[in-house]
Length: 355
Image 1 (cartoon, rainbow, N blue to C red):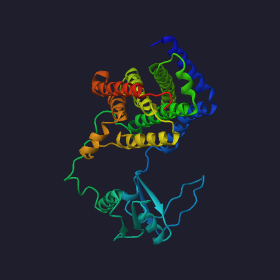
Image 2 (cartoon, rainbow, N blue to C red):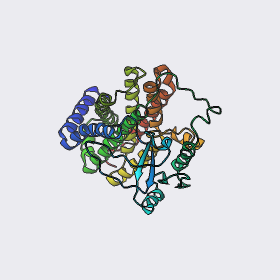
Image 3 (cartoon, rainbow, N blue to C red):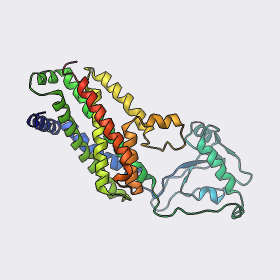
Image 4 (tube, rainbow, N blue to C red):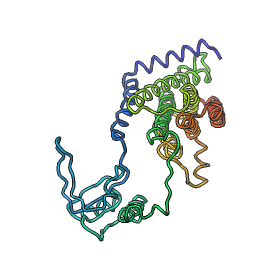
């Protein structure tokens, strides 16, 4: 490997990225859009989780002087929680239509006991809301002799603290696969790689330069997202920033190397786009980006371990949320390193300048 040729390719790829105003602007703008999205979604102290439909009620417009206060004749234990949002309906048919389509979790007729309510048997949240309704009509303290509540010791992890590493990992995944896999296939299609084939540049040098350039861009983008969201939400960082940076680097290299495998062959941009979507969508749902797989079937958990994003997010959350150091995430890092080596080897062996 010639380091001078590698450096020239690396600098050229960065110049190309900077001169592509649309691509450069999107990579800078997208992190701020994520920050703005977080600001809207988590602007309140406690996000609403359950929706309680009530009829008959007429929703009035909120004014600057006062918030809308509905005339509810329901138990205070049902309507006094910040986890439950009251959705008013003028007529029963309006609320039933929303309930059938799972836009609300329970529908209750406003009035005095006995309270008439409707739920969908296909809705898990409806089942929970039914239990909440039944508990709310029981006299306060009547169950104290049967239950004992204990508080979590230490700092509690907010949902946004758990979710944020998944958002960063998902952003890196999409940028790595589309920014490397899709771009190289387009270069092959328009003949750029064919001209490079006539030079002394080897496939390993070209792929390494692409990997280095994309890793630096993704690390910079992740840093922008991190700083912006941390400014808004003050994340509770339990571990070391340096350890997190090491995991970020290894995870990013792993994702980019997977993109190089996708880019090793093919001249059809449409096919490449389909292949990338075929890879990214299972990872997004099985790698615990949005929700935990705790309690899922064993075959689902086994399948999730095939994806590098699973090990990337697992190590990242251990450091950020649990305060682990690098010695405690050695297994995840070794898996990422092995996956990276395998992907780079396959990508180099299968790489074609023209096919």
